[in-house]
Image (cartoon, rainbow, N blue to C red; front, side, top):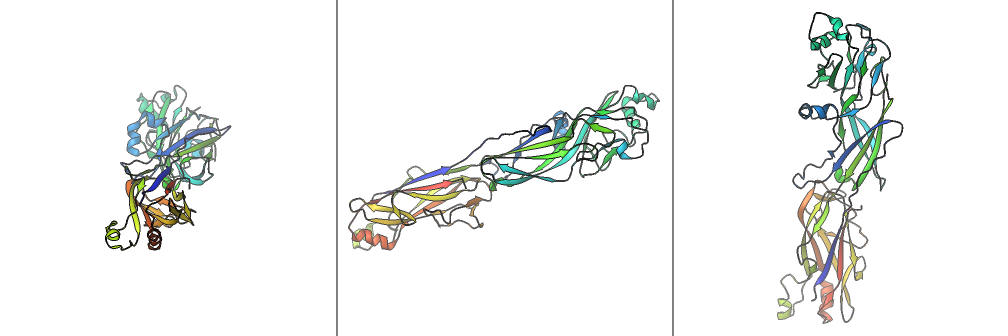
Length: 415
């Protein structure tokens, strides 16, 4: 019998990332990538690729300990009047309240329109306050600059954050300014009360740290997902610096750019595309005693690497209903070939069930969706080819010796 030829094709899509900033707003890009790592198949999460700037760029060790990173914004603020000594409320002095609660943002696949949700929260805030030369001298007593900065405010130096904000590790000062960074575990006011009158004050920039929750990339399509989240800035807004310190911009837009670079790779061993269908124990029983085989079959091993959803299907040189056929060259007599697939552990169907001898059909029914529960890296699967008993009898009764046909098995990530 002439060997059955089987072609295997996989389809893989990888798209790059693009970003369009929001108009008329202070904006920053938040980028993340999912690219499966064969050495860490259990780590199925996005990797934040946003460049670090500001506090964490200057003091990376402090941020590594706290597992945080920051972005610096050219967001300046100036006081609209003096900060009075022992002012009556937090809003009349130096205060910060940031969106420390999780907020959702929809991201959309730029090609397919599929949507997912990311969540983000501010986890820290920092800046450099600047005051007129000579203000630190009002505390008197010939103290050091550090001690003078401490005495200007109730509750010690600005490196020690007021509750509920928390200490982050480093503060830097000169005679006219003090650079600080505070962790923000909750969305509440953190305020410093001036103990001496400060005629004017400004913030030279804003650094913020954030945390990101990303969707499960194994359930996402390859390509780019983009979306935005806008915060208001100013008194009583999302980013609130009180009633005295007024920022130079009233809007901050975060542009989310998530890239999914899936792997879908199928490897067939050398010669594996030539499939010969034979009886269970070979042809000797038929040749020696005329006993007809129960079936003709071949199990062909392959290796698959997959981090994405995919579907499977068939293309046929010769068709028999919803499956492929092999034909006898002279007479054209055709018999159907049943094709099925067994996938390795870690890959399931749409209902979460393992895939064992699942029929492959021309219309794709039953194999519309397979999905990984983790990154599957070069694990073995099996293609099963079989001609059933009644068809084998037809082939042998006709006296033909050669049946052949091409079957193309398709792994397609465009689900």
